[in-house]
Image (cartoon, rainbow, N blue to C red):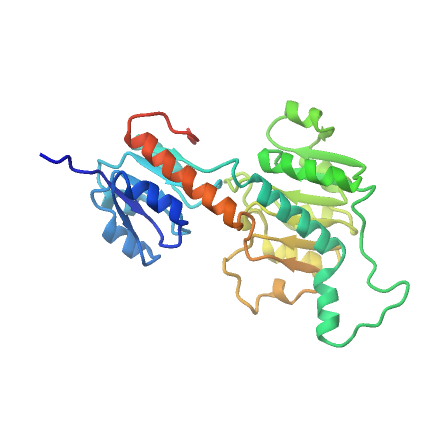
Length: 320
């Protein structure tokens, strides 16, 4: 009798082909073609593995619909804010993500945003579009990375990659904050400080930490008021780290100099949102890991985690 292949569901149809091909070679694999919760609930019953690449929240409803045979969820992302991690733990379902392979691409975006915001590229583009280009020696002066103090909120793998890149810009000092001091911080020449100390000392504040209950809207009105009026805020973590109304206020009132954001709330951000209109806010539509090679590597790793779990082997990149 032919062995019945285990079922795998890929949550969206825009996954790089390498991930789909790896799973189809081993399992009865379905690709969800409608990116809605209703479609996922309809297709998930009986699956042994979920390849999770959607912004839809993986919650109790979807897990109940899947059934007790679900063994593993492989997230094609580093962040897990769209997954009920505690519920997966309670059900003894394995969980993996794709850290590491996106570090370089996301760090590159952080540098891009820091430069774009500090050199007023959004405002400069608006002057060109509005035919108000009027250069003189004091026109459109920005801020330098050279000689600055850069604060990294969350010195994980991406945070470390950002520091390594910014060293080439002759930054004077790196400081960072987090749950605890890290040996890697000393190796990079970065000083461990409190969050408040980082805000008050930094010329550039870069958020690269995960979104958790304790980090939700940590950048609020109080935080922005503690920053220098000449400082640049960059967020490549998650939009939920920021109280966006407070950020809009800080940018409008020049409490801070400028901001560069790759993540925001909601996503996609409406074209009439206040952040879009501000000349001192440079926006990128969540392109952190959006390179062909990075996304292919993420899809491959997520698929390999599924294969490992369903073969009774250890996950390559387990979350717990």
